[in-house]
Length: 121
Image 1 (cartoon, rainbow, N blue to C red):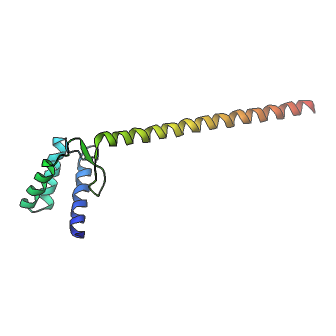
Image 2: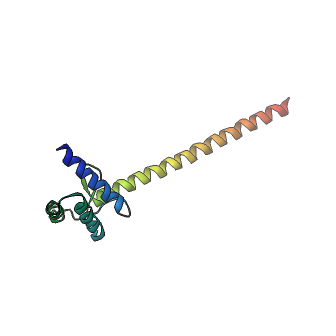
């Protein structure tokens, strides 16, 4: 079983590296052609054809492989996760900008107090 997992992981890794965006997609004919080529390179031709047919004939429409364990998620879910992550990153940047502005204002207040103190002396 360990050998089979290694072979599958190698196939998935090669497939990911061979598609333009790094995310294999069963709805993309170019991605399927790449998969077929990789299967033919790594497996016996009979086994390769069987595996390819099983994968293509499964209902993986609008689904994408998301990791080396061959987990498959709906593309909408993947898109949602990407949008959520991007939104969180934007919020972090906005929060940093707000904090920097608050520090700047606080420094300006301290400078103003120091200037006023020096004027009094």
